Every structure is written in C-alpha cells, then in structure tokens.
Length: 119
Length: 107
Image (cartoon, rainbow over all chains, first blue to last red):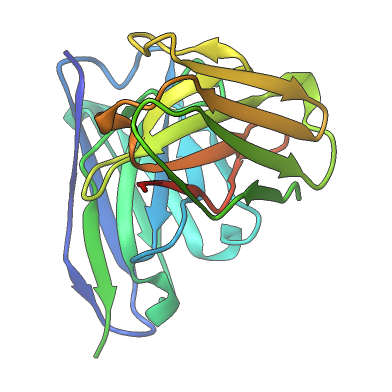
C-alpha cells in the first residue's frame, strides 16, 4: 500500500531555509492525487501549508505563501517543501499527506518529522 | 479566511458515554466541505468524516457527523477506550484550515 515518509534536517537556524522531502512508496506520485504539507507546533493544532499536483500546479496557505515553495520530482517519486526566513515560530512537526483528487481532505499521512528552529 | 472554533476545549467522559463535539465556522462552509480527524499522541491525524457526514473507509459507525452552514457536530455514540484522543475539524470549501481541536479525555 502507499506510504509517505518525510526526511530532512531536524535543526534549522533562524533566518535560514527549512527543506523537507516526502518520499511516496507503493504508488505513483503521478496518480490523480494532490500532495500536501501540514505542520503542528508542539502541543498545538494543525496548520495546512500547501499542496502540489504532479503537473507542478500548487496551492498555498495565504498566510505562508510568501515564504513557501513546494516542488515535485516525478523521477524520484517525491515532493519537497522549502520554507524561507524561518523563526522559532516555525518549530513544528511537519507532515506530508495525500489529498485524493483535490477532494480537500487528507486520507493518508506520513509519520511526521520534528523541525526545530534554533541557533 | 474561514476560522473554525471547536468546543469544548476538553471533554471529560467515561467509556460507554456519548461524546458531542462542536465546530463552528466564522462564515458558511460551502457544500458542507467539512471533515473530522482523530489524533492520538505521537501519531499523525486520521480522517474520520468528510462532507460533514460521510464516514471514511474503515471508520466504525459509532462515529457520526452532522451539520451544515456554520455549525457542525461530531458524535461518538459510545466511547471505546481507543477513542480518547484529540479531534480536529477541517474545512476545505475555501482553501484549507483546521480548528483548534477538542481533547476527549478519560474521566
């Protein structure tokens, strides 16, 4: 079955760029699914960051749009997140998730990876 | 931007009791594009309900969703031990956004 796995540095310096990758296994990233990033600060709620289709089309959370880039690498069956100019407020568990056919809901999630912003 | 407010923040109940969770939107959620998720400590969220009232694959029928417009409810008819968790509502009628969550804890 399809699985998602996040990877990337667990520590990023303030003002730097957070970079994460989500590997899709057991299925093709070029299916009719959209692929999203969602984050959760420690002890807090969920925040949708943005999404991408295998064609490269993207949608972003307006509150983060100026700092976010989501890209797809079909040859590696993975998609990536870059968040620039990070501060301590960006410390969170970052999840990648599958959104079937732009349905708006997330039916499959990765296990999440904690990214801490600190000097 | 649609803001979702969940209440109560914490619900203290015993196994076997009925749980009623509320999610109120700051403006109408189009076409009932409202979902519910369950999250247990250290785990990713799990989709329970979509379209306000449709259960996702494999979700027990003790979970039910209702509502439209700005007021939505998740009901757990009889709490099982594995149901004690945090529950989030999510709207997808205008971009995507989550509520702040309701923790269902053992009384």
